[in-house]
Amino acid sequence: MTEAGAESANGSATPAMPARRRSRLRRWLMWIGFVVGVLAVAAGTTIAILLHRAEPMMRASLVDTLQKRFHAKVELDDLHVSILDGFWVEGRGLRIWLPPDIQDAVTTGSDADVSWRSQPWIIVGKMKFHASWRILPGKPIVVSVIHIEDVRVQLPPKEDRPHLSMPGNKPGVAKPEDTPAAQASVQQPSPKPKFFKMPPIEVGKIECQAAELVIERKQDSTKPPKLPLDFQLRKITLTPDGHGGPVAFVVDMVNAKPVGIIHSTGHFGPWVSGDPGSLPVEGDYTFDHADLGTIKGIAGILSSTGKYTGTLRRIETEGDTKTPDFRLERVDKGSGVLLTTHFHAIVDGTNGNTYLQPVDAMLGHTHIVAKGQVVRASDLVAGAQGHDITLHVDVDRGRIEDILNMSANSDKPFMTGNLALNTSFHLPPGKESVWDKLQLDGQFHLSQSRFDNDKMQGRIEQLSLRGQGKPKEVKTTDPDSILSEVQGHFKLGGGNLQLPDLDYKVPGAEIVAHGTYGLREGSLAFEGDARLDASISQIVGGWKGLLLKPADRYLRKNGAGTDVPIHVNGTRKEPKFGVDFDRLGKTDNSAKEANPEKDQHP
Image (tube, rainbow, N blue to C red; front, side):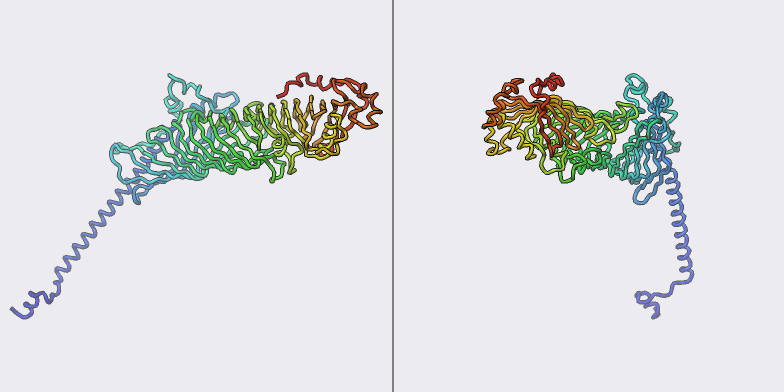
């Protein structure tokens, strides 16, 4: 063996590869690269074809699912599919119309406003979701979350929405989706390839950002146009049960009026074809930082918690509210009274009408029970705008200062005392202030009351002590120790409080009067009789009383030791008292004739 051969055998040296072998290796590498390239192109082409076929199939499946869910026409502008880490699907321009039976019912109406008929009632700007690559025969495509943005839901006016009495919803009658009108109006899904049937889509959760709920209002061509109710929904999370049953939801929204933030969780559904108002709903809510100043006439920041159940048209709700600074809108922000309520109400979610059954409230130290309704004015008077509030209010225990504090800018109310009353309460719609349009009709009873005005309370002190025949004690008695009792009927309208049979009592005296009190200016206009237990000579006392002895008999009438006709004019801050000398010695029955039911007090 040569020396070179020995080195090769021992592996200590490698001879150069022959040129023929190097050429053969390059040819193999080129063929392998070519085959890999062809396979890559084929795979890409296959995937592109599959995606091209999958997009219309998935679009058709989605449209078909929604059509069956809503029994209505559904359109989807675009659906794009990518295969990065599974299937990523993005759609744009989803539109869902109202069910055809509703449209047909509106069309046949004699005076129906069908301007909304050609518009979809649900519009979705963008949606996207992710699904696994694994698509097995007979198994649904599982989508964990669908993300939705820019949603608008627009409901027609209540008058244009038929109820459950429609033929399509009566027992034994064909369902709306089975009618020719429904079948003709529902968009037919794109044809599917015969060799592959697209499986159904199973959704775990739907998350929605930036949604808007718009409820249209009935328009009258002879009246100014009415703005719709607009609710801004910041975020919505929907979780279907997977079997067509109720859908769980979590909602954060901005309430239209009063403006505030609502957070609510609960369930709704299943969907009732042909009648959105009969959609079942239940849940609970919190309502924070609600600015009552967005409701004309009142002010304060309200918070509320509660629960609700029923259908969209009839939601029974129960809850509590708290407003630390409840007041009228003209009152300074530093004022107001703590208002808490516990309520049970029925709400029509399609138009906002509310029926209170009842509201149990505490305004400061005053207990109030109210029953009644808050309804759209147009439901009562054609063409009217705003809301009409009609209540019956009972105060079984209360303080008059609580009522006065919510309507006065001063730190102290002009009167304090125990209050009981019952009244009808009517606040019609209109641009006027609350006190100009508020209407009350009822009766009241004040006890243990006193005036904050020193001049007026001083007059009351003199009236009481002189009426008891104690004129010498006027200068030594504390005026605040003289407490009054007041009762009577009242009517409020146009900002004026009418008191037809005011009965005012203090120890030793009674004033029976009638007149009006102007709430805005605090103006007083009363006349009546001051009836004192003591005779006129006892009232004056001393040597002057002796001189008035002959007048005792002349002024003794109406069962009183002394009966003096009086009047009160001026304002609440500057009252003016006087004697009507032209009525001296005459029996005054005007108050009794004004209201023969004067003894029927609470």
